[in-house]
Length: 470
Image (cartoon, rainbow, N blue to C red; front, side, top):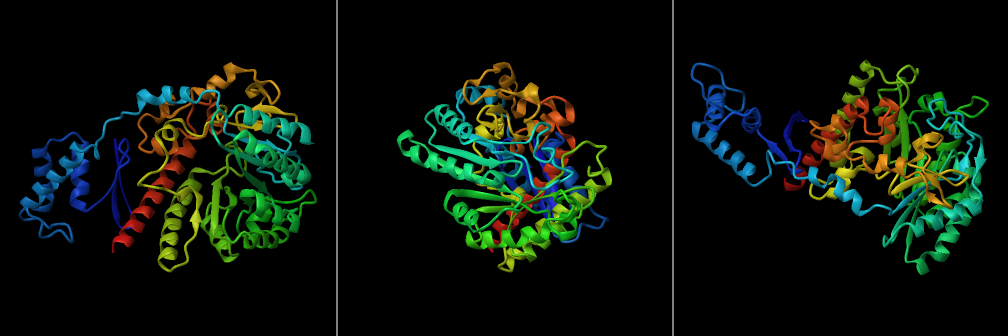
């Protein structure tokens, strides 16, 4: 399976199963397309000859000197790539889909600790219903959090590196417990042969010097919620008095990021129907001095006023292309910035297991409520039928966990003919469930945007490689 597209003046061909990416001229682009249609060499040469060498008709600009020998050489090169398994490669991954996940069965490597099911903001688009997750407001006790960390260590097998995200609601509303849990983990990790990497996700309202100092010492990453332009951010991210939070949080974010040396953080924003021109929000973040950025499309019911419409989708896809161009221009000018969804390694990238199996929600990764209940991930919390068990007894609903263990890119029929499936690994189970009613479904709108992001990310990486070779 291949995917051909043109972006930023480059003709790009992606080979799905080998992972190869080829930058080609127009002749090669056309020739690969003809081979992909099932045409044999002589048919390909005839079609190319008519376009590029035909008498009595204008030739494509820049290709006036193409000869029949050039076309023969082009076909030779394509067939050599095919024979080397770098073009039109066969799918050798499908037989591994179930086997790979079975090898890691029962091993947990990451937890999302919901230390606070409460929040000091009242964002209307919040998937967590303002931090309550459709339930009661609560904060996690140290005892529950300690048991969660013990559960993680007890069920992590021989894995040394463990991930813990302090999440909410707003985790800073339970800050002392966060600090106490980190201290506990540090006190036992050496004897248990583990290494904890902590992440903090915060809206910034309660950031102070203590938070900054502790986060810089103990947090591998800090995720900061900012939607970009002040007017965009303050439309939704308001307190319970209806007042926007932009003015209060931006100086705190700037101080924290400066103290971290500009690394180990992400500004994480959400764009909605009201700002599909999200590139302007990216630019606003850049103007504020932030360079590690992420903007996510809102996920909500189609009838929600914030939901992206079909017209919005076209704007958003155009914005992704313009974003790639901006990143290229700034990198060449010595002012680079990072966009989370464009982080791509064409020479290595995710291992085969991750390409097939995805995020590992419900198996390798789980969310823990303030009461110690286990859910497949933070987006399933509050959905009682997806409760897996608790941190004292472990997984007590194996039939529920099995749904997630069976999730892989080959378990989703809708992924069968998608060229990008080994980049997204089948996508988000929560988004699939909320869109289709099943964790093995396909969230079509999300897929459409993901494919566009991948086209842009690949083109950006191709341009970087070209610049390095120049």
